[in-house]
Image (cartoon, rainbow, N blue to C red; front, side, top):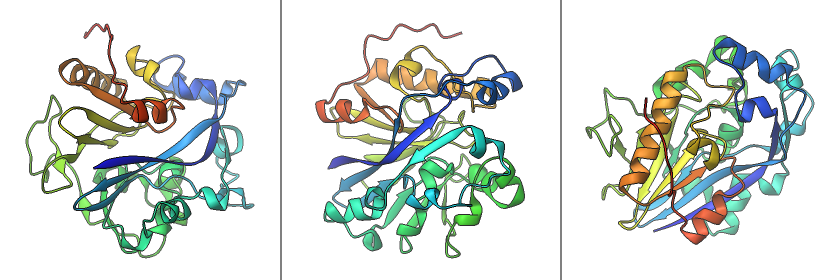
Length: 286
């Protein structure tokens, strides 16, 4: 079993999105008031090469974002809050093909959440089964989804997720401090756990090889240092949920060697290749 990082381009966001400023509604407003941009951040997706078949976690972004009108100009976030650079050969489909994986033959795709930089490449996988959180799926659809900053208008007509992961339908009970888990593989070495915060139904994928737990974290934080300091981003709407998720991850890392791999951390690839576990964390659970 091996994990491959797939960098599907670069994104710039406001520094107040990467690390939130203020609390509640003020934290969200500060993203738009902030005039400072981050350095370019990677847009990472992941391929898990498992004996039962390849598993893709997130689909990255699409080069169609450069086309006029792809991002709705009426939405303030797309006008003032984000910049992206993605070329056609950086999309996940061509990159998987270069790794010898036909996207048409990928059996399982897991979405951590539905923001465009994680779901922009959905159209590469028309034959796959989709593992999503129903809360996030419902929240991203329709007119209200568009108001929230999702882009359901660009989902393919065939897109209809059939594996909905929630506490009600997860076959496994608590796992390593998380309230439930959903095994993706029969051997239980790849599973989904709930990590709400960045979005209400955000989920992450954990890969357990016995020696290490690889935590494919989506946007639970923008980098590992922000996790260590329990610094919420500017998007998180329910602070208590985001902080509880961070504490669960930190607690896991105290018990087991955990390699933390968020999607926009330029050091995630280094930590993966060097098997560098999250360690030396001092935190205060309140």
